[in-house]
Amino acid sequence: MTRETNGNPRAEMPLIPDATQDASAAENLLQTARRAVEVAQKHGASGALAFVNTVREVSVGWRDGKLEKISEAVTSGLSIEVYADGRYAAVSSSDMRPMAIEKLAVQAIDMARALAPDSFRGLADPKLLYSPRMERNLSLHDTSYGEMTADKRREAARLMEEAARDVEGKENIVSVTTNFSDTRSVVAGASSNGFEGFYRSTAFCPSAEASVRDPDGRRPEDYDYAYARIQADLPDLSSIGKNASRRALGRIGAVKGKSGKYTIAIDPRAAGSLLGRLMGPLTGSALQQRRSMFEGKEGEAIGSKLLDIVDDPFVMRGLGSRLFDGDGIAARQMPIFEAGVLKDFYIDTYYGRKLGRAPTTGSPSNVILKPGTKTQAELLRDIGDGLLVTGFLGGNSNGTTGDFSLGIQGNIIRGGAIAEPFAEMNLSGNHLEFWKHLTAVGSDPYPWSSRRVPTLVFEGAQVAGL
Image (tube, rainbow, N blue to C red):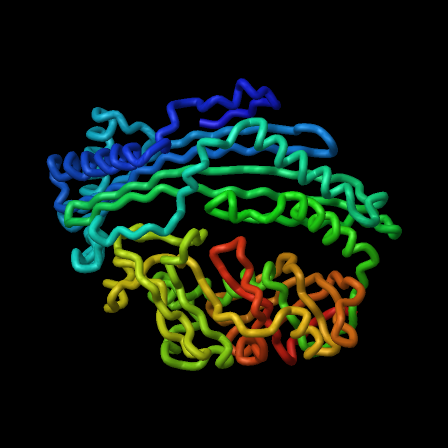
């Protein structure tokens, strides 16, 4: 359920009672998940897994000196996976009334019985499942969330826009758009073989985007944002507005550099995107379907010794933190790369059975690349001459072969310092070779993402330009 309120404060009242006000709401959702599993079993399912969630999101947009939009969405959902006669089906609905749950469960079982048997389908091993005795506080829920008001959201968006227009070179600013959004959610799940769990979480995301006037007629634009579970962890909001404008103004006069091999530094905000392309084929489905460049390479060196990555679901206030995954498997820390060597994959229950491997988890949580000891400024001084990549602009990355070709923008590094901006250049290579040229890692992991990656330095990178 979504609506736009066009700036009317009275219209920002909750659309339905806020089901995430206290811990009892989580228990109510858990009871709903239990009920769904019980109903599925009553109608013939040999096993069942159910998840229930409730999410409220409010967003305020401010553009060029005035309130542009306020939106609120409150959604609830139930999903049921059933196993019957060696067959599997999954269904979902937003209707969680008892009669609707029963109808949904019957529908799921009828669907399953109409499908071909699949011997690999089944609930996760009970020994791997999360249970309430494993509960730990990850501080994912801001207890002060209830203090958010329409006035506070509007003031946050207005403040960022005002700050964005108060920078050197402001006469070149064409437009500024800011947004403040916050979310509160509850997730609960239960299965017929022992899994039960729930968690509450909040998230706050202030952002700003600015477009500017370039003398050559172009309209460069850039943005800044923050994303945190706890509102108090956000930076000063005015800094977000100022950074967005400064980044956009810094794009004025961008040049297209010469083709060649460069030493490049990748800014933390962009480095997570590159790492995501490397890690995309680390899934059980990619392995089983022969679509992974990592097939047969477990235990081999994929990168330099500086490629040291752990998946850690227990980061306090982490954006990817969790207690369990979509199979109900209890979360655990997992090394992905150690000193460049590939150690493990993201394998869910289904593909684990197909591959004959023990499941780990189906998706990443917090992906942490071990930081170094030098700041970005120190790394740039060490580089001397090269490129600082601040953003990727389209392109492609082939998870089967490892080949990639990505548009890049950023700044030229000259004499160890940041110089003029560059644009319309392209970084290409193969992941299985490229990461072996990782020669330095910064001390500055990016804080506003579940991928906590610092500045990365690569030597001999192939860049196309003029």
